[in-house]
Length: 571
Image (cartoon, rainbow, N blue to C red; front, side, top):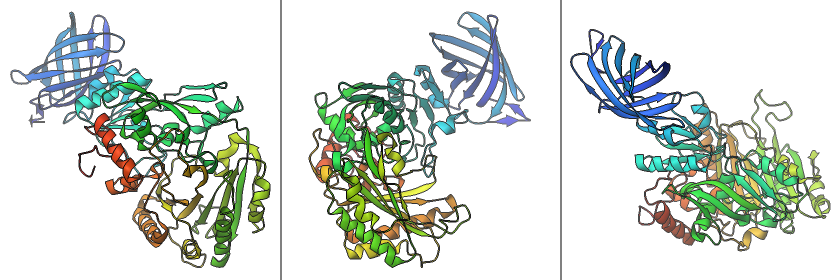
């Protein structure tokens, strides 16, 4: 902004004031840009238009104001600058108005170019600096920070469609988030759609199905289905959002028995890049239905799903906890587990986690500086207690395995319920031999000095995961025997050291790495194109890229683990 002797020469900048017309007073914030455009916000309206300079210290502006639940109205104001303020007179439609405003700052407002978005939204539209803005675009995983141009807290599918259409016209990307468990790419400058208020939930006990809105978490679905003696195929946390889990494929705790959760999706309601709301299923746009289950948010914003429910009331499961005071003990427990899983039927799903806690006062004394091996089991049937006996013979200090209500299945894993600053990595592994055991236990060797040590989980795969699903999708274990998931606390001051530790750990396990990944376990480190490609077979990746070219050729949905359209770059 140009100033001379503290007197404003143009109105460029952001102003806050009041307007009086027809017996009422309204507050407003207005932004004047150097290009002659003007943007207005009030508690119940937005507006856009043009301004122009007049004689010395004078200017005028005209705009179209869109009032909530009402039509547009024309505003014209003739104004004069006075130090850090301006006064004006004009009309609101046919009503005379007087206006006064105070100067808040130079440059146009952050919301200047996106203010008209709010006119089409029934829910809330938030801009940088607004109360609730930072909370709406935060999430469970805090290592990725979003700085979108605007946040749409959608009230319904029409809000989602309106936001997508606006973004396409404005040339801005779309980001979507429910809980933020799988954040990958900062949504800087994007139109950010928060789906947390899309909370539709109904259960059809006769059809054994549930219809689920995009704002729900698995804990809520578990509770609703249990009232009818039914259950969904959820993962290890009841806090995880339903849609991110399903579009990533979904690796249930009962994965060896029932396969991926994506196998059990009947239909999806999705807003595509053209702003249309589509219902996709095996009979309605089956190619898109295939792609979205595994292709994550590359093809649109999923607003609702219909899924199968299973008649499951109880499950046998729990945790066996082995403190390890030396490397030999750790190798014995891990090696025994790897031998045990080779004998298990498909009804038994399990994982083993290697943990070493730092010696810090924030932890309970019983964990400080100590190493542990955890085995977790989930069995569908009557043989769980018998099958677990070899693990009990290893002498765990803690054993919670028992028959429990299916609604308590996520308590077996005790995942964090609050946002975390963590570095997450994953891989798909071949069968593991004695050398792999020695390499793995070296990460939790109690004799090693302190450092940012990983927690490494190995999930046993196979069983139903290796069979073709009834409803084909883009997810596959690609023949892997184990899924590796590494979760490491990553405070900002230790972020580089934590990443180096993760890189070193995966490099040392390279001999057993298949080179593949699961789409649902890709995180911020996995956003590079060559890493995204690892999550799919070559044939599936080519098909996904071709469908991306059909449904999103302009890459509106690129704030994600992106699959470029066929003919664009690598694709």
